[in-house]
Length: 454
Image (cartoon, rainbow, N blue to C red; front, top):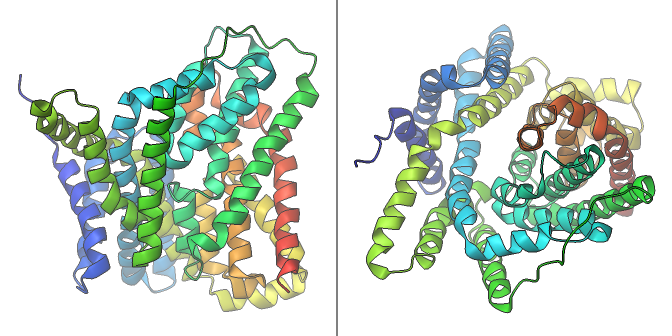
């Protein structure tokens, strides 16, 4: 049986990822127009294969961005810059795609999943949240999909809600600090003077506050509620502990080490590390050496052939980038400074408005990527009046929480599909009470950090 033919759009995506890597070490002016043209071609080929929601959002964002740029008399420059700049996000999606397949097939990670899902009621919420946080912080959506098997549509409605919330909270909170999340890439792109190490420690602190705060919130609300029975919890063998720590730790060390030593961006480091790491990981799980090449080649074909399936993410992120660049031509940052001085003179109030504004816009369907990119274009740190890294920590802290109340975010849609519960129920009924309490804590934390640096 012959392997299915790899579509043209997959090769185009692969070329964009390659250009993003080449752009790091080669000073060639042709990369920008070539990357922009290939991105447009990919969208043309795949746009009608996308579901209606990301298709409409992407088209509206791109159209609005181009219209704004045309009105500002900078259509060609803004279009070229917006489409070409998107290659960074496409490279990140490309890198993460390599890790998802071996993560699903890893016996050690499957054993870790059983440990998480077998926990008794008293600590199930906390262990589920911490477990998916740990796995997701390195494996991204693959980590969530591993643990999401604990969601059973036959569960009691209350337990279904609590477990879904635990998984959402644990997974999205890793966006506060993990270099493997798109949130970190977008925030560092919007704030180019900020480095990962500047924001990650405080982001991790915010993430743990969110996880343990969610656990306490759950205990207060449901301390008398029945949460369902559970058998004897499974223990992770020493061998599997070593394997899980080895895989997650080595991947994190390689990526972060390359970022710090080579002074390159996180997507570039991931793009360089993830493909060979995934191939070696696959080979290590292959029983016979004679089949190593077959399995590794099969992984490469599967990843490259599946690149067109990233069309939804590409539409939204390209649209957000073009929109941010286009709108920035109409709203120069220097014009907003005097307005803020008049209408919102308090810098602390600006931080609160920023965090709650991102959340409110996300709740009505605007993904945080749109707002953060726009903030980076029209509200730089010198206009907001706060240190760049404090703004970065605030944006990272609110990012994951905002996706929990966005019915169109990837996390909400995925868990809605797994649980059989409406994404609108999750986003607009289940999660807002805790989310807005947590965002208040994030705002206070950002204000404290700002004053601690004065």
